[in-house]
Length: 179
Image (cartoon, rainbow, N blue to C red; front, side, top):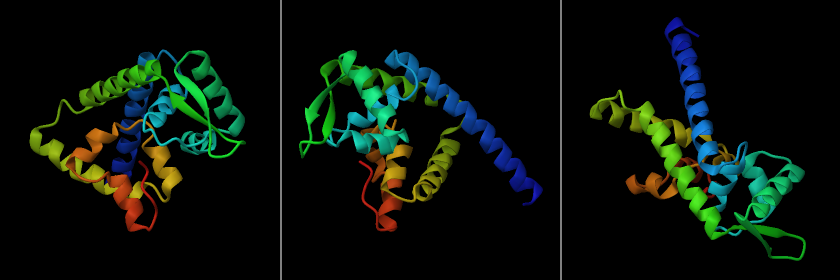
């Protein structure tokens, strides 16, 4: 690896950690819950009516950890448990309080990330947008990885400029969409 690429990799790593910390701090504060709760709520907001096992895959948690997370969200009145397509599965579904929490989480994430971009000109922001789309198209090798990558995304905003770049990348590899 040449020196310029090594510097780029190092700086990307530093920025990635900074952005990750900003998102975690903002979304956990908005949800009033830490760890994976903001991502779980955001994922459930997509109204796909999928069982806990699907949520487990998107969050990269064990099945028992996902069940405990859904239990906590249910106890807090943010999620209800509904029967799945068979008698063995349970589908977590957001309550109205859960939807309100998702709106706060989404806004907090958007505001935190907007702050990172304040130093860019309009042209620089547009260039960054094209580069991010290119990187995101290649980022997820399959649908579960795409779901994990997009677990906190504001899907309607993402799709205003066309299809989600993660979905476009998956489609190009013959995989299904994330959303």
